Image (tube, rainbow, N blue to C red; front, side, top):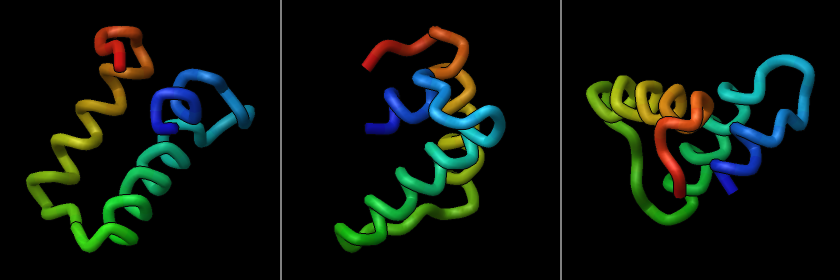
Length: 56
């Protein structure tokens, strides 16, 4: 889900933000939350996915 929404360019702008919110919402629905450190790691991970540096 995250890979598709982040690399599929569903919107003209905001794809990475939408992907991050979708990932955070998924985690919250499953009883998990993102810490401040986790937010930085998630941002880095999203940028790597968007640039093709990580394949899922």
